[in-house]
Length: 266
Image 1 (cartoon, rainbow, N blue to C red):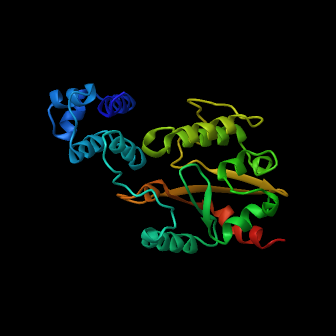
Image 2: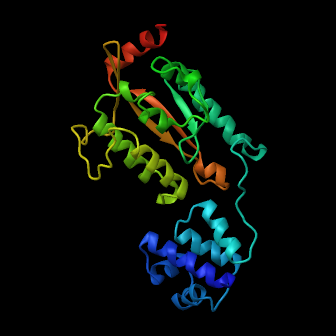
Image 3: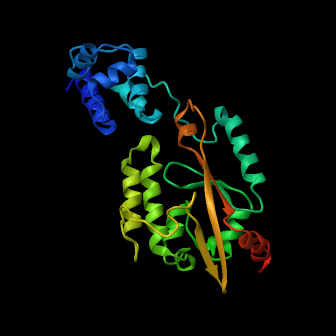
């Protein structure tokens, strides 16, 4: 298969994912539909800038844009270095501040597959009140911690609702709205845990709330939290696009009052 033919297959695949016609993409990329048709059929090779415009029109994630560029014979445009690489210094400093100011409530930095890269002091202390975190092998994955019967699972109330909402989050928050192979592996692993159902269209009593609460219970104490997720605006590197900071907040005044005591108890 020639490079242009392979590129055409990739572009058609992304059009199918986005549910867009050649006309839709050509309007968004400011090229003629005929030109796009020629690119997809392998009869024409796009310039690099034109290919980037097409990728933007299709909202292709940066990692996959590099794949398109390579398929067309161009070098990748978007750096794929580590999240803590020197060029990420301004972002990592901002993340460190976000984690710190979230005290005394938990906050974690995660990659696209929910692996924890960094955390504030409150996060391991909070989860350590339920689970022996030191005994868990790394790298630590927040979703495996939640679903594992030997992790947080026994302490989560309304498990059917919570597990369904978390499964749905994996799909909704996939980079570019596409469940990549590793995210699919993660979903399969989560669905393999006991008492987990792939409930599509699940509607709970909290469905009309502006957030999905996470309810934990231990030693007769019930704590209700919700989370907010932050991402980097207009990222220019793969790592920056795939980072997310998740912060937990009390969902009610009672939890806000009980949180400090809960964290202070041995």
